[in-house]
Length: 483
Image (cartoon, rainbow, N blue to C red; front, top):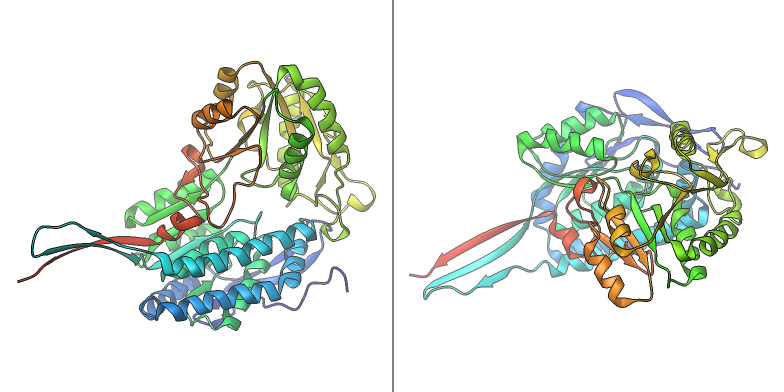
């Protein structure tokens, strides 16, 4: 029946076995209806330590496996994800709220990521450095060891695969802690790991309190790498905690992306790109355009076209063919309320939306109107605070220098976008933007073969591409002398 949760495991997965946890089970809610979906097992320090021990035990076996066998298993996982795309997408929509079509796109990225990393495992090349007579200088890349991975709720399936795929491709073993709001997508992926024949202990799943599991991972001498996607505040804390054991660490943190529209940009195509990217996952993405800078000479016509496009955005249950679903929880709606209230008080105009959706079919879910704010300035909180919701703040600019300065006026430095037909201008501005990624006349900045990551308070390290798999490697220099 439509909207019914498929049969799924509810337990932890440690050393190839589904296990009960020692803590009170966690009830997973459907954010579109407020209804309980299912309760899943929870573990803490004890279970995390068991998972670390299992990963440590399996590491020499997995990293020592013949490469073609490792590659075969990764491809098999990718194939199984593709075979189960409808089931995985339904589970994601029920627990996270995004439209079903969008969930399927996310699962497709899992398929691409898994197959790409399977092949990238074959391309982890070392180097030979010119050396004096009777010497040989070699640089080797070897897997770092046990990896702790902590993933968020906004992309509850892809964030898992984007971390685990390169880790196991590199020869590492993993302990995963998924978001408490969306553990079912993680469980569904781990069911496929088992079905694909991934050896016991290579990937382990522990649901439970973030602080307890996180501290156990960061304190462990056996965990040699930590990879985390989430808020900047939590990332900073994990960074501090990892200092005592000097782990390698990758942090993909918050973003506050500028979206710059110059006067020569084609308005219709630019508006289409903005609306598509802004309302992806209802704005709940670290790469979401959050500050929309529009050159003064086209501001009026751009704003009119934008209003018409946003007016067509539909909101509702992700199973009903809508553009966007609910926000993840009540706290998310509260944050949006506060940002809009502050902006209005300081002079911003609400051109569209600006309020919760609470009547009729919207009564039980966490819904919010697609919103456009005009007259936004740097005196308002929304100019600096990351917006995790369906709000488009419009900001006017008059010169290249002015917009570059405003765009860079942020602690964050993840994604940025600019639209212009002037290649000279595009090159100049893309160089000047203090962001790890720049989309010029498009928003497609996340690809399996390209590096993903930010600067400043948006994190450390990169995911995807050969840069991603190298995050799970150590460099070893071997100096050989021949007698």
